[in-house]
Image (cartoon, one colour):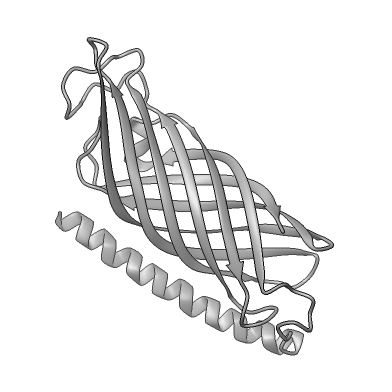
Length: 218
């Protein structure tokens, strides 16, 4: 429990640093681009994006989980104007298969050939900021929110058990966006950290993973 509190404080500090860097970057971009203006630059105030890709578990999670898949949908609200941070509201889905070697379980004897699956549904709110203006632009983002972790566990006797918990989590990362008229293609990678207590087939204080996503932004 103490470790979770320490990690939580550490990530809070990181989030504060990211927000400070975003504010400084926004000021620099305004000076570089002359302010940009909300509607004058042709940038829509609201944009919607969808994507999917591969999620790689890291840290302790990689010992129990195989590489998974992800899907995401999000809304960007750019009410401050072009070149300034946009609010990002995202819904994410990650699905993993447990490794056959998983043996430590809080729900009894587990199938060693097909232990089960773990899926994470997340809802986050955060910011996104482009670092350099132009048709091809790198960006950074950070957010926090709630994540539901749902484990489907296959018992050695053929029975199935479902475990579900909702936890606080944070994520952050970056990527690159290429504009084609009013439609953009993007590629991004995020570091996702979901704070948990003991659940499913492994005991853990957090689930850490790196979702790599490709998608379209309208």
